Image (cartoon, rainbow, N blue to C red; front, side, top):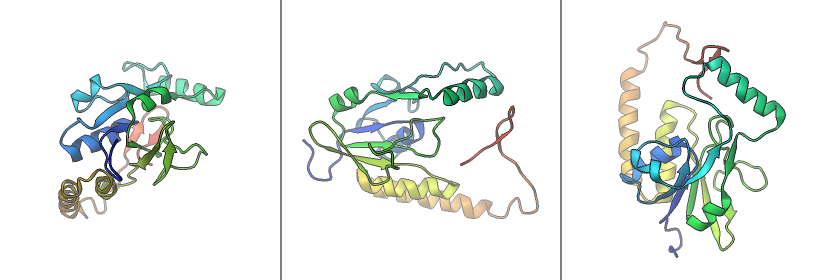
Amino acid sequence: MAGEGEVRNIVTTEPSSTEMVAYLDQSVERIVGVSDKCDYPVEVISKPKVVRSLVDISEDMSSREIDRVISMYKRSGKPLFEIDWDLIYRLDPDLIVGQTLCDVCAFPLKTGLGAPARGAYTINRFRVIRVAEYSPHSFMAIATEAIRLSRIIDRVSRAESLYHEFKRIYDELEGLGRGVKTAVIEWIDPLYAAGH
């Protein structure tokens, strides 16, 4: 069993959390479970899948077709994802990391009461598992959320380096597009602006 606060095994519930934990760790060794959408770094592809999509979407579908399928699922009350809690219990993680930004693109990490998981804990059959949210809402928040996560997994120096690199890029680009109107579109049909 891990010591108090020590994180030996991590489950991630969607790609951005998986990628950030792997980046901070410079390894995927502590990641013991991922979602079926996680494919980077490539080593996570062989990890056990604790979250699976229940929506049948293929790479060759148009944005209109994908929107139709997702909307149908949501209207019917069908879940978009399923989480395999029995597998998570068998993997016995010290930490579960996921996002609460989008209920379409990833399993929304919630406590048992349905509240957002920031700083929350969930009860394993045998012990308490810490739950951490990784939900950046802006470019710089990617780095600040990484610092918060790094404190939990003891990789602060790596996150601080990332923050300084993001800040350098931000300062370099700040004002570059002043006076230029730009729209970033995630979906073309139907029209959907990117970002949360």
